[in-house]
Image (cartoon, rainbow, N blue to C red):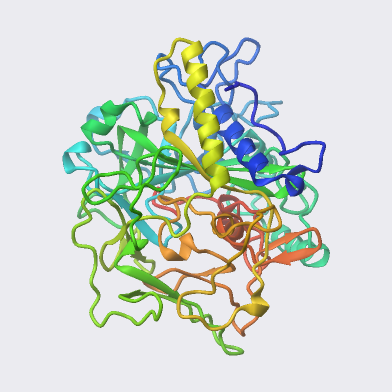
Length: 560
Protein backbone atom coordinates (compact mmCIF):
# COMPACT_ATOMS: atom_id res chain seq x y z
CA UNK A 1 0.00 0.00 0.00
CA UNK A 2 1.43 3.42 -0.90
CA UNK A 3 2.42 5.47 2.11
CA UNK A 4 3.56 9.06 2.55
CA UNK A 5 6.23 8.10 5.08
CA UNK A 6 9.76 9.28 4.45
CA UNK A 7 11.92 7.12 2.15
CA UNK A 8 13.03 3.83 3.78
CA UNK A 9 16.38 4.16 5.48
CA UNK A 10 17.89 0.70 4.91
CA UNK A 11 16.90 -2.66 3.43
CA UNK A 12 16.30 -5.33 6.11
CA UNK A 13 17.15 -2.79 8.84
CA UNK A 14 18.26 -4.53 12.02
CA UNK A 15 18.94 -7.84 10.27
CA UNK A 16 22.11 -7.14 8.35
CA UNK A 17 21.09 -4.25 6.13
CA UNK A 18 21.95 -4.11 2.43
CA UNK A 19 24.66 -6.83 2.36
CA UNK A 20 22.16 -9.33 3.82
CA UNK A 21 19.24 -8.38 1.57
CA UNK A 22 17.92 -10.67 -1.12
CA UNK A 23 17.24 -9.29 -4.61
CA UNK A 24 13.52 -9.43 -3.78
CA UNK A 25 14.02 -7.34 -0.63
CA UNK A 26 16.17 -4.83 -2.51
CA UNK A 27 13.48 -4.48 -5.19
CA UNK A 28 10.82 -3.89 -2.52
CA UNK A 29 13.07 -1.24 -0.95
CA UNK A 30 13.40 0.48 -4.35
CA UNK A 31 9.63 0.62 -4.81
CA UNK A 32 9.18 2.04 -1.29
CA UNK A 33 11.62 4.81 -2.25
CA UNK A 34 9.76 5.41 -5.51
CA UNK A 35 6.35 5.77 -3.86
CA UNK A 36 7.48 8.04 -1.03
CA UNK A 37 9.52 10.31 -3.32
CA UNK A 38 6.75 10.57 -5.93
CA UNK A 39 4.15 11.59 -3.34
CA UNK A 40 2.64 15.07 -3.90
CA UNK A 41 4.64 17.67 -2.00
CA UNK A 42 3.42 19.56 1.14
CA UNK A 43 3.22 21.82 3.02
CA UNK A 44 2.10 19.90 6.09
CA UNK A 45 0.65 21.10 9.34
CA UNK A 46 3.59 21.94 11.58
CA UNK A 47 5.95 21.61 8.61
CA UNK A 48 5.85 24.89 6.70
CA UNK A 49 8.95 23.95 4.69
CA UNK A 50 8.70 24.75 1.01
CA UNK A 51 10.68 21.67 0.01
CA UNK A 52 10.78 17.94 0.63
CA UNK A 53 7.58 17.60 2.69
CA UNK A 54 4.90 15.14 1.53
CA UNK A 55 1.39 16.54 1.43
CA UNK A 56 -0.88 15.60 4.30
CA UNK A 57 -3.99 16.12 2.15
CA UNK A 58 -3.09 14.80 -1.32
CA UNK A 59 -3.19 11.11 -2.12
CA UNK A 60 -0.57 9.26 -4.13
CA UNK A 61 -1.40 9.73 -7.80
CA UNK A 62 -4.14 12.28 -7.02
CA UNK A 63 -4.95 14.01 -10.36
CA UNK A 64 -6.24 17.05 -8.47
CA UNK A 65 -2.77 17.72 -7.01
CA UNK A 66 -0.84 19.20 -9.91
CA UNK A 67 2.04 20.79 -8.03
CA UNK A 68 5.50 19.28 -7.59
CA UNK A 69 6.07 15.87 -6.04
CA UNK A 70 8.50 15.38 -3.16
CA UNK A 71 11.74 14.75 -5.05
CA UNK A 72 11.03 17.59 -7.47
CA UNK A 73 11.38 20.01 -4.57
CA UNK A 74 14.95 18.81 -3.88
CA UNK A 75 17.60 21.34 -4.87
CA UNK A 76 18.98 21.16 -8.41
CA UNK A 77 22.73 20.85 -8.78
CA UNK A 78 23.22 24.55 -9.64
CA UNK A 79 21.28 25.41 -6.45
CA UNK A 80 23.69 23.23 -4.43
CA UNK A 81 26.89 24.22 -6.26
CA UNK A 82 26.46 27.89 -7.24
CA UNK A 83 30.16 28.76 -6.89
CA UNK A 84 30.37 30.15 -10.43
CA UNK A 85 26.85 31.54 -10.43
CA UNK A 86 25.84 35.10 -11.19
CA UNK A 87 25.85 36.01 -8.34
CA UNK A 88 27.43 33.07 -6.47
CA UNK A 89 25.96 32.00 -3.17
CA UNK A 90 22.75 30.70 -1.64
CA UNK A 91 19.58 32.81 -1.79
CA UNK A 92 17.26 32.92 1.19
CA UNK A 93 19.84 32.30 3.93
CA UNK A 94 18.92 33.87 7.27
CA UNK A 95 20.82 33.87 10.59
CA UNK A 96 20.60 30.67 12.67
CA UNK A 97 18.96 28.72 9.84
CA UNK A 98 20.19 25.10 10.21
CA UNK A 99 19.18 24.39 6.61
CA UNK A 100 21.06 27.36 5.11
CA UNK A 101 18.08 28.58 3.11
CA UNK A 102 17.27 25.14 1.66
CA UNK A 103 13.56 25.95 1.50
CA UNK A 104 13.84 29.05 -0.70
CA UNK A 105 12.03 28.90 -4.02
CA UNK A 106 14.19 27.73 -6.94
CA UNK A 107 16.69 30.03 -8.66
CA UNK A 108 19.05 28.82 -11.37
CA UNK A 109 22.07 31.13 -11.51
CA UNK A 110 24.86 30.29 -13.96
CA UNK A 111 28.13 32.09 -14.69
CA UNK A 112 26.59 33.62 -17.81
CA UNK A 113 23.07 34.94 -17.37
CA UNK A 114 20.35 33.76 -19.73
CA UNK A 115 16.97 35.22 -20.61
CA UNK A 116 13.71 33.76 -21.85
CA UNK A 117 13.82 32.71 -25.52
CA UNK A 118 10.17 33.78 -25.66
CA UNK A 119 9.73 37.13 -23.88
CA UNK A 120 6.16 36.18 -22.91
CA UNK A 121 7.65 33.58 -20.51
CA UNK A 122 9.97 36.04 -18.77
CA UNK A 123 7.68 36.48 -15.75
CA UNK A 124 6.46 32.90 -15.41
CA UNK A 125 7.09 31.11 -12.09
CA UNK A 126 10.40 29.26 -12.12
CA UNK A 127 9.73 25.55 -12.76
CA UNK A 128 10.98 23.00 -10.25
CA UNK A 129 12.28 20.87 -13.14
CA UNK A 130 15.49 22.43 -14.50
CA UNK A 131 16.82 20.38 -17.42
CA UNK A 132 20.41 21.62 -17.62
CA UNK A 133 21.97 18.42 -19.03
CA UNK A 134 21.71 17.54 -22.70
CA UNK A 135 23.76 14.36 -22.83
CA UNK A 136 24.79 11.22 -20.97
CA UNK A 137 27.97 12.30 -19.12
CA UNK A 138 29.51 13.62 -22.36
CA UNK A 139 29.30 10.24 -24.13
CA UNK A 140 26.19 10.53 -26.28
CA UNK A 141 22.95 12.44 -26.81
CA UNK A 142 19.66 10.54 -26.65
CA UNK A 143 16.60 11.07 -28.87
CA UNK A 144 13.04 9.75 -29.06
CA UNK A 145 11.83 9.01 -32.58
CA UNK A 146 8.21 8.95 -31.44
CA UNK A 147 8.27 12.73 -30.86
CA UNK A 148 7.18 14.89 -33.77
CA UNK A 149 8.51 18.38 -34.42
CA UNK A 150 5.14 19.96 -33.67
CA UNK A 151 5.10 18.38 -30.20
CA UNK A 152 7.48 21.04 -28.85
CA UNK A 153 6.94 24.51 -30.38
CA UNK A 154 10.08 26.62 -30.54
CA UNK A 155 12.33 23.72 -29.54
CA UNK A 156 15.26 23.40 -31.94
CA UNK A 157 15.79 19.74 -30.88
CA UNK A 158 12.27 18.41 -30.19
CA UNK A 159 13.35 14.75 -30.08
CA UNK A 160 16.28 15.35 -27.68
CA UNK A 161 15.90 13.81 -24.21
CA UNK A 162 17.16 16.12 -21.47
CA UNK A 163 18.25 15.44 -17.90
CA UNK A 164 18.58 16.94 -14.45
CA UNK A 165 20.34 16.06 -11.20
CA UNK A 166 18.95 16.94 -7.76
CA UNK A 167 19.84 16.19 -4.14
CA UNK A 168 17.97 16.34 -0.86
CA UNK A 169 18.40 18.49 2.24
CA UNK A 170 21.10 16.19 3.64
CA UNK A 171 23.49 16.82 0.74
CA UNK A 172 22.69 20.52 0.44
CA UNK A 173 23.34 21.21 4.13
CA UNK A 174 26.54 19.14 4.00
CA UNK A 175 27.90 21.28 1.14
CA UNK A 176 26.56 24.58 2.51
CA UNK A 177 28.00 23.93 5.97
CA UNK A 178 31.43 23.56 4.37
CA UNK A 179 31.14 26.68 2.17
CA UNK A 180 32.27 30.08 3.39
CA UNK A 181 31.30 33.18 1.36
CA UNK A 182 34.47 34.91 2.61
CA UNK A 183 37.09 32.14 2.67
CA UNK A 184 38.15 31.24 -0.89
CA UNK A 185 39.89 28.07 0.36
CA UNK A 186 36.73 26.70 1.95
CA UNK A 187 33.98 26.87 -0.65
CA UNK A 188 32.61 23.42 -1.39
CA UNK A 189 29.86 25.07 -3.45
CA UNK A 190 32.53 25.73 -6.08
CA UNK A 191 34.75 22.67 -5.69
CA UNK A 192 35.96 20.47 -2.85
CA UNK A 193 39.24 21.96 -1.56
CA UNK A 194 42.34 20.15 -2.81
CA UNK A 195 43.50 19.52 0.76
CA UNK A 196 40.24 17.68 1.55
CA UNK A 197 40.42 15.70 -1.69
CA UNK A 198 43.99 14.60 -0.91
CA UNK A 199 43.09 13.67 2.66
CA UNK A 200 40.11 11.64 1.42
CA UNK A 201 42.19 9.78 -1.15
CA UNK A 202 44.79 8.94 1.49
CA UNK A 203 42.08 7.71 3.88
CA UNK A 204 40.52 5.50 1.21
CA UNK A 205 43.83 3.97 0.18
CA UNK A 206 44.89 3.30 3.77
CA UNK A 207 41.60 2.00 5.20
CA UNK A 208 39.76 0.72 2.08
CA UNK A 209 36.45 1.90 3.56
CA UNK A 210 34.45 5.11 3.32
CA UNK A 211 35.33 7.82 5.87
CA UNK A 212 32.85 8.45 8.71
CA UNK A 213 29.56 9.80 7.33
CA UNK A 214 29.11 13.54 7.59
CA UNK A 215 32.84 14.23 7.86
CA UNK A 216 34.19 17.63 6.85
CA UNK A 217 37.81 16.51 7.17
CA UNK A 218 37.13 13.93 4.44
CA UNK A 219 34.47 13.74 1.75
CA UNK A 220 31.74 11.48 3.12
CA UNK A 221 28.13 12.53 2.92
CA UNK A 222 25.67 11.90 5.78
CA UNK A 223 23.57 8.75 5.84
CA UNK A 224 20.18 9.55 4.32
CA UNK A 225 21.68 11.54 1.45
CA UNK A 226 19.55 11.06 -1.67
CA UNK A 227 20.36 12.09 -5.23
CA UNK A 228 17.97 12.00 -8.16
CA UNK A 229 18.64 11.94 -11.87
CA UNK A 230 15.67 12.10 -14.21
CA UNK A 231 15.06 12.20 -17.95
CA UNK A 232 12.32 14.21 -19.67
CA UNK A 233 11.06 14.85 -23.19
CA UNK A 234 8.16 16.42 -25.09
CA UNK A 235 5.15 14.17 -25.58
CA UNK A 236 3.22 13.76 -28.80
CA UNK A 237 -0.54 14.49 -28.55
CA UNK A 238 -1.52 10.83 -28.14
CA UNK A 239 1.00 10.36 -25.33
CA UNK A 240 -0.09 13.54 -23.56
CA UNK A 241 -3.71 12.34 -23.60
CA UNK A 242 -2.92 8.76 -22.60
CA UNK A 243 -2.56 9.23 -18.83
CA UNK A 244 0.54 7.03 -18.93
CA UNK A 245 3.11 9.77 -18.29
CA UNK A 246 3.79 11.92 -15.24
CA UNK A 247 3.77 15.44 -16.68
CA UNK A 248 5.22 18.60 -15.19
CA UNK A 249 6.30 22.10 -16.15
CA UNK A 250 10.01 22.08 -17.06
CA UNK A 251 12.70 24.55 -18.04
CA UNK A 252 15.14 23.70 -20.83
CA UNK A 253 17.90 25.65 -22.51
CA UNK A 254 19.00 26.46 -26.03
CA UNK A 255 22.06 27.97 -27.64
CA UNK A 256 20.61 30.66 -29.94
CA UNK A 257 21.82 30.30 -33.52
CA UNK A 258 24.58 32.78 -34.32
CA UNK A 259 25.09 33.86 -30.71
CA UNK A 260 28.51 33.84 -28.97
CA UNK A 261 29.83 30.60 -27.43
CA UNK A 262 28.44 29.86 -23.99
CA UNK A 263 25.33 32.02 -24.29
CA UNK A 264 21.88 30.57 -23.89
CA UNK A 265 18.20 31.30 -23.44
CA UNK A 266 15.53 29.23 -21.68
CA UNK A 267 12.06 27.95 -22.50
CA UNK A 268 9.33 26.59 -20.22
CA UNK A 269 7.07 23.76 -21.38
CA UNK A 270 5.05 20.81 -20.07
CA UNK A 271 6.90 17.54 -20.71
CA UNK A 272 6.77 13.91 -19.64
CA UNK A 273 9.04 11.98 -17.25
CA UNK A 274 10.66 9.00 -19.01
CA UNK A 275 13.30 7.81 -16.48
CA UNK A 276 14.19 8.19 -12.81
CA UNK A 277 17.38 7.24 -10.93
CA UNK A 278 17.25 7.18 -7.11
CA UNK A 279 20.48 6.74 -5.17
CA UNK A 280 20.57 6.78 -1.37
CA UNK A 281 23.38 6.45 1.17
CA UNK A 282 22.32 4.24 4.07
CA UNK A 283 24.09 3.06 7.25
CA UNK A 284 24.72 -0.39 5.78
CA UNK A 285 25.39 0.87 2.22
CA UNK A 286 27.95 3.70 2.38
CA UNK A 287 28.47 3.04 -1.36
CA UNK A 288 24.79 4.09 -1.89
CA UNK A 289 21.91 1.96 -3.16
CA UNK A 290 21.08 2.52 -6.85
CA UNK A 291 17.49 2.06 -8.08
CA UNK A 292 16.41 2.94 -11.61
CA UNK A 293 12.90 3.22 -13.07
CA UNK A 294 11.47 3.91 -16.53
CA UNK A 295 8.21 4.86 -18.11
CA UNK A 296 6.63 1.80 -19.72
CA UNK A 297 6.70 3.00 -23.34
CA UNK A 298 10.36 3.85 -23.85
CA UNK A 299 11.26 0.85 -25.98
CA UNK A 300 9.26 0.80 -29.20
CA UNK A 301 9.61 -0.87 -32.58
CA UNK A 302 10.00 1.38 -35.65
CA UNK A 303 6.24 1.27 -36.17
CA UNK A 304 5.49 2.13 -32.53
CA UNK A 305 4.72 -1.27 -31.00
CA UNK A 306 5.96 -1.90 -27.44
CA UNK A 307 9.03 -4.10 -26.95
CA UNK A 308 8.20 -4.68 -23.24
CA UNK A 309 5.01 -4.57 -21.22
CA UNK A 310 4.44 -2.27 -18.22
CA UNK A 311 5.98 -4.83 -15.84
CA UNK A 312 9.11 -5.38 -17.94
CA UNK A 313 8.33 -8.67 -19.68
CA UNK A 314 9.80 -8.80 -23.19
CA UNK A 315 7.05 -9.18 -25.77
CA UNK A 316 7.70 -11.82 -28.39
CA UNK A 317 9.37 -11.92 -30.77
CA UNK A 318 12.24 -10.06 -29.12
CA UNK A 319 14.39 -7.92 -31.44
CA UNK A 320 17.47 -9.94 -32.46
CA UNK A 321 20.07 -7.21 -31.85
CA UNK A 322 20.33 -4.48 -29.19
CA UNK A 323 21.05 -1.74 -31.71
CA UNK A 324 21.02 -0.88 -35.41
CA UNK A 325 23.82 -0.74 -36.51
CA UNK A 326 25.38 -3.27 -34.16
CA UNK A 327 28.08 -1.95 -31.84
CA UNK A 328 31.14 -3.63 -30.32
CA UNK A 329 33.36 -2.62 -27.43
CA UNK A 330 36.93 -3.78 -28.01
CA UNK A 331 38.65 -3.83 -24.62
CA UNK A 332 42.20 -5.29 -24.80
CA UNK A 333 44.65 -5.18 -21.91
CA UNK A 334 47.09 -2.29 -22.58
CA UNK A 335 50.82 -2.93 -22.65
CA UNK A 336 52.80 -1.65 -19.64
CA UNK A 337 53.07 2.13 -19.71
CA UNK A 338 50.56 2.56 -22.54
CA UNK A 339 47.22 4.31 -22.32
CA UNK A 340 43.91 2.45 -22.45
CA UNK A 341 43.11 1.37 -26.00
CA UNK A 342 39.44 0.47 -25.64
CA UNK A 343 37.24 1.64 -28.47
CA UNK A 344 33.67 1.34 -29.74
CA UNK A 345 33.15 0.31 -33.37
CA UNK A 346 30.23 -0.29 -35.71
CA UNK A 347 30.10 -3.84 -37.00
CA UNK A 348 28.00 -6.29 -39.00
CA UNK A 349 29.15 -9.24 -36.88
CA UNK A 350 29.30 -8.86 -33.06
CA UNK A 351 31.12 -12.21 -32.78
CA UNK A 352 34.18 -11.00 -34.68
CA UNK A 353 33.62 -7.24 -34.29
CA UNK A 354 35.11 -6.60 -37.70
CA UNK A 355 34.47 -2.91 -38.39
CA UNK A 356 32.26 -1.82 -41.25
CA UNK A 357 34.29 -0.57 -44.20
CA UNK A 358 31.88 2.33 -44.48
CA UNK A 359 29.83 3.47 -41.47
CA UNK A 360 26.16 2.67 -42.02
CA UNK A 361 23.92 4.45 -39.54
CA UNK A 362 20.22 4.12 -38.74
CA UNK A 363 18.64 6.52 -41.21
CA UNK A 364 15.01 5.66 -40.35
CA UNK A 365 14.52 5.42 -36.55
CA UNK A 366 10.73 5.53 -36.83
CA UNK A 367 9.36 5.48 -33.25
CA UNK A 368 12.52 4.01 -31.76
CA UNK A 369 14.92 5.56 -29.31
CA UNK A 370 18.23 6.46 -30.91
CA UNK A 371 21.49 8.05 -29.84
CA UNK A 372 24.42 9.84 -31.39
CA UNK A 373 27.90 9.71 -29.90
CA UNK A 374 29.40 13.07 -29.03
CA UNK A 375 32.45 15.01 -30.09
CA UNK A 376 33.61 15.76 -26.56
CA UNK A 377 36.35 18.09 -27.80
CA UNK A 378 33.73 20.52 -29.13
CA UNK A 379 34.61 24.05 -27.99
CA UNK A 380 31.03 25.32 -27.99
CA UNK A 381 28.62 23.97 -25.38
CA UNK A 382 26.63 21.85 -25.58
CA UNK A 383 29.01 19.19 -26.94
CA UNK A 384 28.04 18.37 -30.51
CA UNK A 385 26.69 14.92 -31.47
CA UNK A 386 28.83 13.34 -34.16
CA UNK A 387 28.53 10.47 -36.63
CA UNK A 388 25.02 9.16 -37.22
CA UNK A 389 22.02 7.62 -35.51
CA UNK A 390 22.37 4.37 -33.57
CA UNK A 391 18.84 2.99 -33.08
CA UNK A 392 17.93 1.12 -29.90
CA UNK A 393 15.99 -2.13 -30.37
CA UNK A 394 16.19 -3.59 -26.86
CA UNK A 395 18.36 -3.70 -23.74
CA UNK A 396 21.70 -5.43 -23.67
CA UNK A 397 20.43 -7.19 -20.51
CA UNK A 398 16.73 -7.80 -19.94
CA UNK A 399 14.98 -6.73 -16.72
CA UNK A 400 15.53 -9.60 -14.22
CA UNK A 401 12.61 -11.76 -12.99
CA UNK A 402 12.77 -10.45 -9.41
CA UNK A 403 12.31 -6.85 -10.65
CA UNK A 404 9.40 -7.93 -12.89
CA UNK A 405 7.76 -9.65 -9.91
CA UNK A 406 8.27 -6.52 -7.80
CA UNK A 407 6.66 -4.44 -10.55
CA UNK A 408 3.64 -6.74 -10.69
CA UNK A 409 3.20 -6.54 -6.91
CA UNK A 410 3.68 -2.76 -6.80
CA UNK A 411 1.30 -2.09 -9.68
CA UNK A 412 -1.33 -4.28 -8.01
CA UNK A 413 -0.94 -2.46 -4.68
CA UNK A 414 -1.11 0.95 -6.38
CA UNK A 415 -4.24 -0.04 -8.32
CA UNK A 416 -5.95 -1.21 -5.10
CA UNK A 417 -4.96 2.03 -3.35
CA UNK A 418 -6.30 4.18 -6.18
CA UNK A 419 -9.59 2.28 -6.23
CA UNK A 420 -9.94 2.61 -2.46
CA UNK A 421 -9.45 6.39 -2.75
CA UNK A 422 -11.80 6.86 -5.71
CA UNK A 423 -9.02 7.61 -8.20
CA UNK A 424 -9.64 6.05 -11.62
CA UNK A 425 -6.01 5.80 -12.70
CA UNK A 426 -2.57 7.34 -12.25
CA UNK A 427 0.52 7.52 -14.44
CA UNK A 428 2.58 5.67 -11.80
CA UNK A 429 0.95 2.41 -12.96
CA UNK A 430 3.06 2.83 -16.12
CA UNK A 431 6.49 3.12 -14.50
CA UNK A 432 8.61 0.06 -13.81
CA UNK A 433 11.68 -0.83 -11.80
CA UNK A 434 14.50 -1.79 -14.15
CA UNK A 435 16.89 -2.98 -11.43
CA UNK A 436 18.51 -2.13 -8.09
CA UNK A 437 22.18 -2.41 -7.09
CA UNK A 438 22.74 -2.73 -3.37
CA UNK A 439 26.16 -4.34 -2.90
CA UNK A 440 29.49 -3.95 -4.76
CA UNK A 441 30.68 -6.95 -6.70
CA UNK A 442 34.01 -7.26 -8.46
CA UNK A 443 34.52 -8.71 -11.90
CA UNK A 444 37.38 -11.23 -11.74
CA UNK A 445 40.00 -9.44 -13.84
CA UNK A 446 42.40 -12.39 -13.51
CA UNK A 447 40.18 -14.31 -15.92
CA UNK A 448 39.84 -11.49 -18.43
CA UNK A 449 41.71 -11.80 -21.72
CA UNK A 450 41.75 -9.78 -24.91
CA UNK A 451 38.24 -10.07 -26.29
CA UNK A 452 36.66 -8.64 -29.43
CA UNK A 453 33.43 -7.54 -27.77
CA UNK A 454 34.33 -6.46 -24.27
CA UNK A 455 35.25 -8.57 -21.24
CA UNK A 456 31.69 -9.35 -20.22
CA UNK A 457 30.60 -10.48 -16.75
CA UNK A 458 28.56 -13.67 -16.48
CA UNK A 459 27.06 -15.61 -13.55
CA UNK A 460 24.64 -18.42 -12.76
CA UNK A 461 21.66 -18.58 -10.38
CA UNK A 462 20.74 -18.54 -7.57
CA UNK A 463 21.41 -14.79 -7.51
CA UNK A 464 22.31 -12.97 -4.30
CA UNK A 465 23.97 -9.71 -3.25
CA UNK A 466 27.33 -11.45 -3.68
CA UNK A 467 26.40 -13.30 -6.89
CA UNK A 468 24.45 -10.80 -9.02
CA UNK A 469 22.99 -11.58 -12.41
CA UNK A 470 24.59 -9.90 -15.43
CA UNK A 471 21.58 -7.56 -15.60
CA UNK A 472 22.33 -6.53 -12.00
CA UNK A 473 26.09 -6.17 -12.42
CA UNK A 474 25.54 -4.00 -15.52
CA UNK A 475 22.51 -2.11 -14.19
CA UNK A 476 21.57 0.45 -16.85
CA UNK A 477 18.55 2.53 -17.80
CA UNK A 478 17.72 2.55 -21.50
CA UNK A 479 17.37 6.36 -21.72
CA UNK A 480 20.03 7.36 -19.16
CA UNK A 481 22.78 4.84 -19.97
CA UNK A 482 22.21 3.92 -23.58
CA UNK A 483 25.35 3.46 -25.64
CA UNK A 484 27.46 0.34 -25.22
CA UNK A 485 29.95 2.01 -22.92
CA UNK A 486 27.15 2.62 -20.40
CA UNK A 487 24.91 -0.40 -21.03
CA UNK A 488 27.89 -2.64 -20.21
CA UNK A 489 29.97 -0.43 -17.92
CA UNK A 490 32.63 -1.81 -15.60
CA UNK A 491 35.96 -0.60 -14.29
CA UNK A 492 36.76 2.91 -15.44
CA UNK A 493 35.78 5.49 -17.99
CA UNK A 494 37.99 6.91 -20.72
CA UNK A 495 36.81 9.65 -23.06
CA UNK A 496 39.03 10.02 -26.12
CA UNK A 497 37.97 12.69 -28.65
CA UNK A 498 34.82 11.78 -30.52
CA UNK A 499 33.97 8.71 -28.44
CA UNK A 500 33.46 7.54 -24.89
CA UNK A 501 34.15 3.98 -23.79
CA UNK A 502 34.46 1.93 -20.63
CA UNK A 503 37.44 -0.26 -19.91
CA UNK A 504 38.59 -2.72 -17.27
CA UNK A 505 42.20 -1.59 -17.48
CA UNK A 506 44.38 1.20 -16.19
CA UNK A 507 47.34 2.37 -18.27
CA UNK A 508 50.05 -0.21 -17.76
CA UNK A 509 47.65 -3.15 -17.78
CA UNK A 510 46.64 -3.11 -14.11
CA UNK A 511 42.99 -3.75 -13.17
CA UNK A 512 40.84 -0.63 -13.09
CA UNK A 513 39.15 -0.79 -9.66
CA UNK A 514 36.61 1.81 -8.61
CA UNK A 515 34.94 1.10 -5.25
CA UNK A 516 36.29 0.72 -1.71
CA UNK A 517 34.17 -1.15 0.81
CA UNK A 518 34.90 -3.34 3.81
CA UNK A 519 38.63 -3.52 3.26
CA UNK A 520 38.37 -4.50 -0.42
CA UNK A 521 38.74 -2.66 -3.72
CA UNK A 522 36.18 -3.62 -6.37
CA UNK A 523 35.96 -3.58 -10.15
CA UNK A 524 32.23 -2.87 -9.91
CA UNK A 525 29.91 -2.40 -12.87
CA UNK A 526 26.76 -0.50 -13.79
CA UNK A 527 25.60 2.56 -11.87
CA UNK A 528 27.54 1.69 -8.73
CA UNK A 529 30.79 1.20 -10.63
CA UNK A 530 30.32 4.35 -12.68
CA UNK A 531 29.63 6.48 -9.60
CA UNK A 532 32.60 4.85 -7.89
CA UNK A 533 34.91 5.48 -10.86
CA UNK A 534 34.04 9.18 -10.93
CA UNK A 535 33.13 9.91 -7.34
CA UNK A 536 35.16 7.67 -5.03
CA UNK A 537 38.11 6.16 -6.86
CA UNK A 538 41.20 8.01 -5.55
CA UNK A 539 42.43 8.59 -9.09
CA UNK A 540 39.54 11.02 -9.48
CA UNK A 541 37.82 13.62 -7.30
CA UNK A 542 36.90 11.63 -4.17
CA UNK A 543 33.28 12.76 -4.27
CA UNK A 544 31.81 9.91 -2.20
CA UNK A 545 29.98 8.25 -5.13
CA UNK A 546 28.40 11.59 -6.05
CA UNK A 547 29.26 12.76 -9.55
CA UNK A 548 27.80 16.22 -8.95
CA UNK A 549 29.77 16.61 -5.72
CA UNK A 550 32.97 15.43 -7.39
CA UNK A 551 32.54 17.82 -10.30
CA UNK A 552 31.33 20.80 -8.28
CA UNK A 553 29.68 23.90 -9.63
CA UNK A 554 27.98 24.32 -12.98
CA UNK A 555 29.15 27.13 -15.26
CA UNK A 556 26.43 26.83 -17.89
CA UNK A 557 23.20 24.85 -18.40
CA UNK A 558 24.70 22.31 -20.79
CA UNK A 559 27.00 20.67 -18.25
CA UNK A 560 27.08 16.84 -18.00
